[in-house]
Amino acid sequence: MTSLDPHSHKLQLIVAAIAASLATATFLLSYDTLKKRKRRKHLEEDIKQSLAEFSTNSRLPTFGDQDDSLSSSLPLAYDEELMREQLARNYAFFSEESMAKIRNSRIVIVGVGGVGSWTAVMLARS
Image (cartoon, rainbow, N blue to C red; front, side):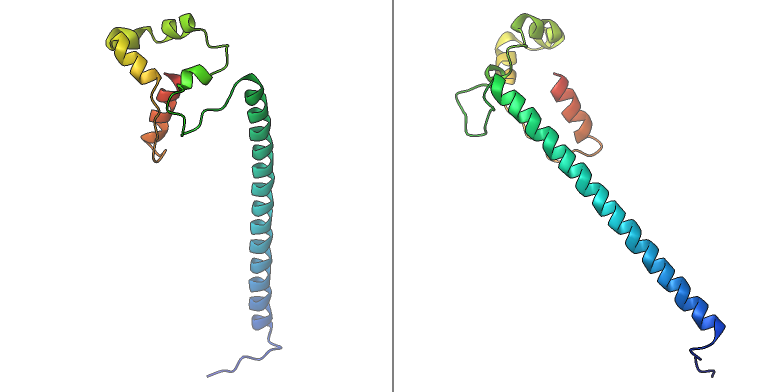
C-alpha cells in the first residue's frame, strides 16, 4: 500500500481541483442568494406601491368582512354594465341569483400547481 506523499504532484492536483470546485460552488450559491434577495426586495417594493395606490382608491377586503362583498370594494373603474357584458355567457348559464351568489363569494385555492394555476387564472378572469 502506498502512503500519500504531501509533495506528490497527483495529490496536489486533487486538492487543487477540490478547492476550485468548492470555491466555484460557494460563488454560485452566493450569487444566487444575492440575486434572490434583490428580486424579493424589488417585489416587496412593487407590492407596497400597488397596495398604496389601491388603498387610495378603495378599501382592501379582509377575511373578517362578512357583510361587504368583494365587488363593492373594487375600484370604480369596473362598471356593472361592462362586467355583465364580459360575463354574458356566465349569466346565460347560471341564473341571476346564482351569479349574485358567485360574485359575492370568496374562494381559496390550495396549491397552484398544474391544475390549480389554471384554475386561479380562469377564476381571476371570471
